[in-house]
Image (cartoon, rainbow, N blue to C red):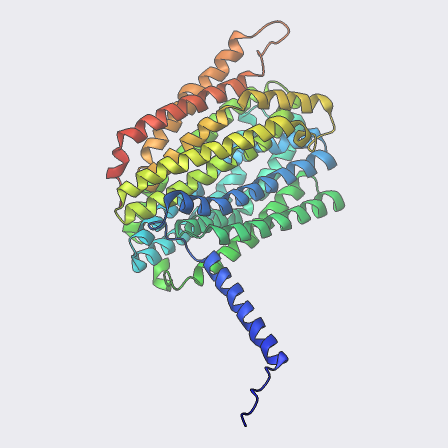
Length: 483
């Protein structure tokens, strides 16, 4: 007589099922946070998978900036909103050091990662960390000294001068968090990890919103409270980025010796990052020149321009996301010497970026008025902002082309060509067109001309910039610039 098989223990089965479930979840998380090797697989899928977390991150970044403006506009007033906007060009001008280091780091790291050179990767990252520290010291000293002279040079109205100055000085003194978040998140993206940078940005965004409301609404700190909240939130996110990098031992291993800057990697950062920093400096200086014209139209137009730029940030999100994704994609594949794959990915990525940009632009045109009414309760300000946005609308699709193809050239190591294109479009086209339209439209009723000169000049520069970028991409000189 055979013995009956023992019945399974329900408790044991439940325990085994829970263990399998945990293993599945852990494997999914490990895969999600693993660096993406973009030298394999279908190009458009790899680019999209990398760009989606960045797009979400850019939404969070824009929300980060938007909440600052909403809190200031609602709790302090329209003049305070104008003060935050007027401070923007000065802040961007003095942060070009970090933008340059971040761009150079991302490209250099992507190429070393694609080439599977672990020791070079560790040394390059250590060099960037040390260069960032030196840049922070420079900004913390120089920034507060030049703040008021620059604001006066911009013809900043006296009614918002003190607010602008306090906002900028706090951010310059607390620049360490902002600098290291940008540098370290750029390194993570170069390694193909856009998810970690997203998570840390989301943490910073939530913290920033909480601190904004606490400092401005509860403690009544005004514009200074917004700046302090931003500095604290970005410091927290930079610590998370550093922690993540130190735990990526399967990709590279950092030692103390790697923190000593090497001549070779310092040169690479300068060669790759300096043109990007100069590009941003040119853009910021052009913004400063145009800001002077903007300020001549008064506080109402300054506030409207701030609102438009905040909404503009949402429209630009897919462009910047795919541009950065294309930089990493091109960098890794150039490092692996897969140039045919770079070209196919460039074509696919540009089409996707343009399509996404078209959809977002359409949504902004339909629902933009409701979005703008969040910033202010003044109907005239909402209407003025919406009219300015309608002028810019179709330029965003052109910017998708510019950002994607420029991203490919930068990733390949050609950061000079996008710099010259930026110089031509911003200094050679945008600034003269803005002042030219202003001068040609002057009347007794409009002594400074039409305020639409700002938006029209920007639209023209975007359209021409896309055409010029496509031409230089087709020439293919970028293939000769890799490390």
